[in-house]
Image: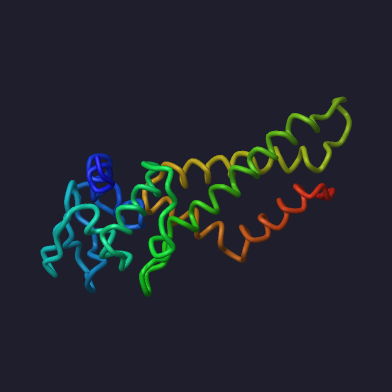
Amino acid sequence: MNIYETVKSAVNTRQAAERYGLEVRYNGMALCPFHEDHHPSLKVDERFSCFGCGATGDVIDFTSRLFGLSLYDAARKLASDFGLDNDPPSAAAMRPGVGKPDPRREERRCLNLLLEYKGLLEDWRDRYFPVSPGAPPEGRYAEACKMLGPVTWMVDHLSIGYADERALVMRLLTHDGWIDRLQRRLGSVIDGEQIAS
């Protein structure tokens, strides 16, 4: 089976549309990214078809058009993004089309940072558990107790949430540069630097 057949047998257009940031309604309709659309006119399921601009095709055509890629690069991008092969996509496939940022790439970066932070919080919760009932909690234990719930919620929504849920989490994470500060902070923990909470 070639890469085109592999991708088409494993991924439908609706899955790709949602992965790449389109909000697809329960009836399979979405705002078309290929023209200025104010009322959902794009039908996505196995294939896609726009009642407004006439765009139509399969999942590879959709990805090609969305990111401005050749069909081959679009197939490789899909295979990589959906874990269907071990070959990394070409540089062209990694670069979104002009004016089309790849929101999923930033979501994946944030999800990886949150997973790393969650693991650290779980470690702190267990390692710095107060040994005596009257002792004040250590700062890292207090941070773990405070942050584990919200971080777990964000991880869940970024990994399996709908597009609007993922967008809400991304707004929370990027507000005032919180995720970038977390990345720097995690880097200092990894480098062995002691962190005061």
